[in-house]
Length: 230
Image 1 (cartoon, rainbow, N blue to C red):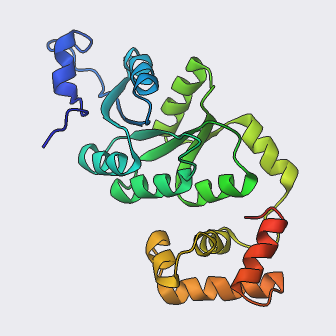
Image 2: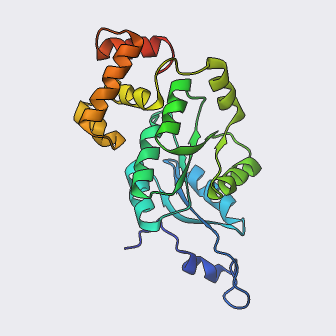
Image 3: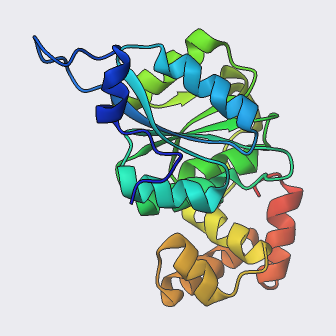
């Protein structure tokens, strides 16, 4: 069933933007927009819809709606706007990726995330991260780049990662597992969230404890946070 927030291309063609007869043009890039602020979402949708090769095919106000819409319309790109009260972009990126594998996820964040948060976003499937104050032309270019299979990150975010160096001795998966445990997840919950087996999660936790020379998982989390890895 099509929701009120979905906008199929065949319906949009009647506006005159897409010719109904004559030469057949290449299908525009289907885009899912998700943002809790209706005005921002509407403005962003209007901006993208002006481009002949882009088409907003669905909108959502909340994360669960975004994942459900992604599963229905299978967009090429999902543009997910985050608010200060909804900081967990990595989790939202993962939900959309799980609902629609192959969809490129672009996170629009309100402020520079911590380096550990950025690394987690990359682990969880975000193929682009930009600040919400991005210029219109840069945003449009980013959507096109993601649709082509590329990746786009705000230069300020990349500089922050470079300055901070590598994430110590921990791998990306070890950090992702520690991050889930740090948020209060059980081993089984972390396994489900990261699409891993409980045994694999335990192995990652044990490896993190050994690499950080921690006493236990809580101590490993503390060390990772103090070092800026998490």
